[in-house]
Length: 229
Ligand code: ADE
Image 1 (cartoon, helix red, strand yellow):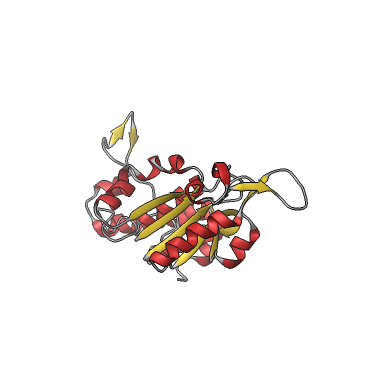
Image 2 (cartoon, rainbow, N blue to C red; image 1 turned 45 degrees about the vertical axis):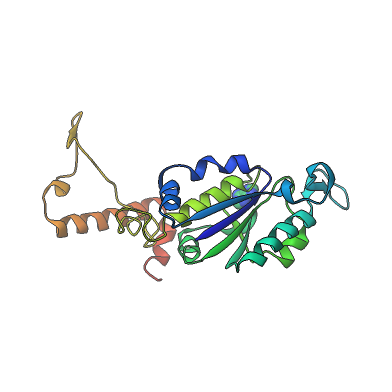
């Protein structure tokens, strides 16, 4: 999978993809992340990429021309499955969306800044708008990093234990069960006996029950949809 990220702050996106799973995904040739500094593509003087909004009001708006030029250049080079704009008024990002996006070959992600991007780019280029939650970040970069991480780790071959993504919270519409490691007795706090019993069926049944219980306690709304897809 190839992901092209359009940003005014490429430095902000260096670290999130340089470690752990994202590093491995790239090292294994399963994921390519390319960042494009919008200022390198602007036809305006002094790297200008934003301007005052028509009609007045505080805050600058990202101009359409630099964005259109980068998007068009990328589209000439390859076909994109989605052109995504990160924005707090987009569709709420969730595991199902990450699963779907992990099947794509090429994605463009546009990171907004200031008051956002000129509406005409959203109307004429963007195919999907994603929010990572009901709060406002100073820019789309951190949100884009969240999406790339959630999608990238699903690519076959990225996780060493192929089953581990399947047992993530949300993957079957329920939260993951609690996990324990050594020592079995830590300061008198003991690991549940069932996990030490060696019977995989019993362990699986306990995990399933714990998942349901945790979901009922913390996110009861998820149970209404669990197992429907
Ligand atoms: N840009 C600013 N806030 C955002 C959010 N919550 N989700 C996605 N992009 C954003």
